[in-house]
Length: 118
Image 1: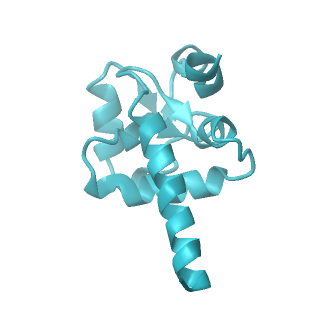
Image 2: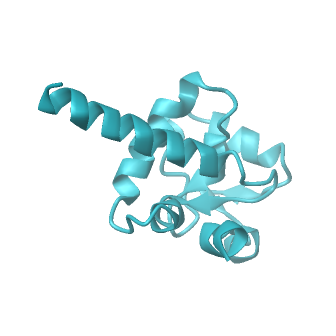
């Protein structure tokens, strides 16, 4: 097996782990790229979590719209089919979004560490 194949398989496994966590985020709640990265034991891999979210759009069972940045900003919105889809999906779950930012983010934040690891 080549180094490239091993690297690709490692990414696929990481992405699958990210997807499994994101599937646990309840409707009406959001988490962050960093929270997922920490839960996976790779706290410096927030950007890679973002790449996984971008790759998840072909799998409709992954609620990628529930993953935002650490400040509650919809930084991944450009990866959805339309520029407003991420916000529309969040709003359909009762989440208020203004200027691409989750309102009441602190109370809506679903901390992966606390929710599934403790």
